[in-house]
Amino acid sequence: MKRRYRIRTRGEFLRVYEGGRSVANQAAVLYAVRTGTPESRVGFAVGKKLGSAVVRNRAKRRVREAVRLLWPAVKGGGAFVVIARRPALDMPFSELLRKTAELFRRAGFLKEKDPRVRALLGPRGRPGGGRAQPQGPAGGEAKA
Image 1 (cartoon, rainbow, N blue to C red):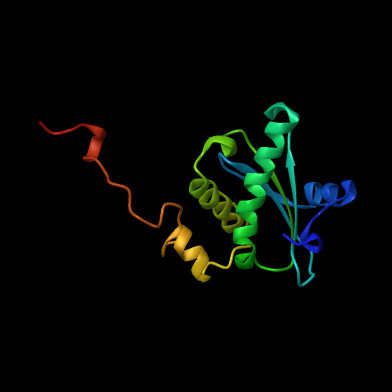
Image 2 (cartoon, rainbow, N blue to C red; image 1 turned 180 degrees about the vertical axis):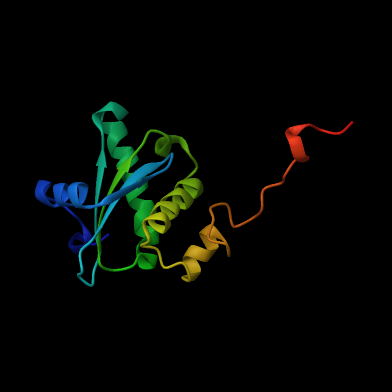
């Protein structure tokens, strides 16, 4: 990801934290704020509670790569901070990519008609390729 798309300073991070709204899932927390500029910018963070510097850097690298792959499908005019959570370390990368796309979609910054997004989220805009989950019988009991 190019340097001009990155949030680097403490002040920029604080502006996003204080002025933005947050959405979260198992993999990460996304803070998003509208900036009114044509380009979007993103910063990455990981809490020390996650582990040693090696572990934190691995979590940031994985989330950064997921965002890099999604970046062409992210709408302009936003500033984002992505905070990696512990499950981001262990989940398969394809699932991390879906979870990251879900965060940007819920924040309202994902171009849902983009073919890359449709391939990840499916035609209905839901994670998991848009497939319906099988439903059991009513009442939750199986018939004998």
